Image 1 (cartoon, rainbow, N blue to C red):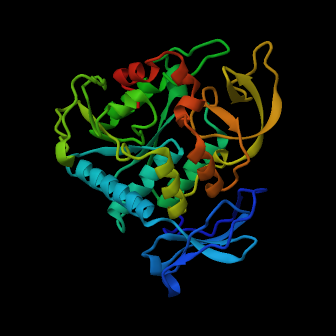
Image 2: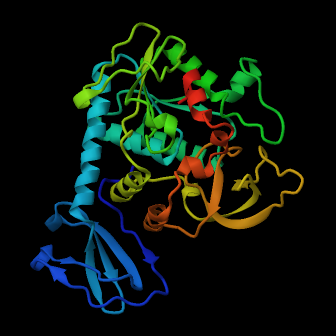
Length: 373
């Protein structure tokens, strides 16, 4: 695994804009902070943990005037560390009230973040619970490769709940047609695995800013003996006091990063040097347009009449099935450039790129009531 020291990053920003005036400084000696006055032709040539700034990430920037340090504002660093502390507290609190916990890991950025937080919560001991992936069989190959490599590095126990197996055993019926998706079929495989292993706490990477159904769900989300969620019968969570009590056969879904935003996630990933699948960064891929989104051509998803396949430079904001995850055109090849893109968007990653959430106004809430993530 990568160390917790931020890695050296290289990126360009604001290409072609007028150069800034000379940047004034505040402070003296090693604690001097440079304050850029305006956008400029800046090349960020390094990122390090600076002891003189209490571990905040310091970038060394270079423009037409010269080189100077750019320090991440203390309020941002303090905010991220407060979120980290809250999340680790939630994980430890859930473990204290459980007997057989498990962590859901899809290989996406949010589950990678939760996995890093869980590792930190129990370091230097090994992860005290297994990791589970609900595999639809329609995943991006890059994501499966990343999943296996991450599990190998952590020496964690991986449980794969296979939707393909559920279809073969006729526990579920696969959708047909050009818009068919296995997304909803994941619920049966998830609940079957939870029951078979008798898991009583299931950690997930859902965030409240992603989607309105997730926005109203508690951090400790109670599920009945059928794995179902009742949004009208949720437990209060006053003063960060969580009620994890449940009877045999029931379980809790716990979401340690509920209070994080997409921007928080990317800043933390950058600061911690967390590895991610390559699909999150700009690359060339054959795509076609459907319902206002760029869908990747694959053996699982083919264009319909009138949909033309073309090669584009794209990346993905979220990771799901290849049949339901849309891409968008992007040239962002580094974490810094991804953060720049996210900072100016006004649509959540699920709202912008998940076809399964567009099937109905309450598509996510309907799935969650049935036992979905």
